[in-house]
Length: 317
Picture 1 (cartoon, one colour):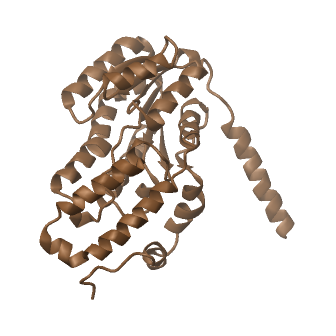
Picture 2 (cartoon, rainbow, N blue to C red):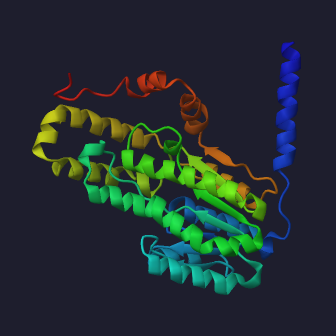
Picture 3 (spheres, helix red, strand yellow):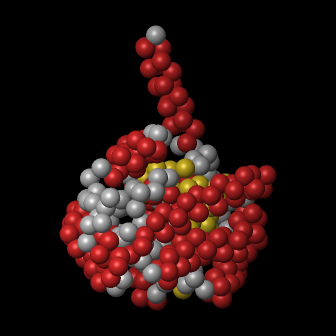
């Protein structure tokens, strides 16, 4: 019996491997627009797709980031400055893309741009911190996607939205998780709405990776600053000892982030170039073997596993 089960499982993965390895034809004629290309996943993906021969349209926040990317790539790659929090900037970028793709349309849209607030407890953050994250990670993503949608429909193309494992199971970073849960929901709805147009939507859910968002010194400085600005009554509720323990835990967590960004960009590339892309990609060993299985456990059990080592606040009951 077990031999039969093992054979069926092996056959399933063999067929899936064959199914997913089929590559879209004429990649050199296809345009892909990527946000957040100054550094991190977006920068690496832009260079990776350029090497594959695709026509990359890279959106950067700064001219310095755009120039560095152009210096590292072929003449095919073009850049545009984009502030995803501003409607006028999105409109300019959409028109810029339209002028370049013409009647062919836009084959791929990769919504990669994102920010992370300090690694704080929810009530340590100001309301503007919440708004800043939501504007970039969710509202900007939605507005940009809607502005590019006619071009993607024309090409019967792909949309790749970068979520996070924290969009599957939320346990810290309340507003960041909220923004990524929103990305998941928007992607699911859009996939179902666009299925008859031939447009395919993929969600990439990275685990912990070392990018600009998780740069240790910068993150720890922001955490300290946020704690210093917390109202006195909230500091008293948690206590300095609680903060110090939390700070050390964040520091250790940041040091464990994976440096192999290709685990994420390979998922993005597959979503753009495979004839049969996946709906969801879990990127990183922590995502695959810890967080995803954890998300299927009963809530009370996953709560215990995730929080059992957390410190207790000074005024805990």
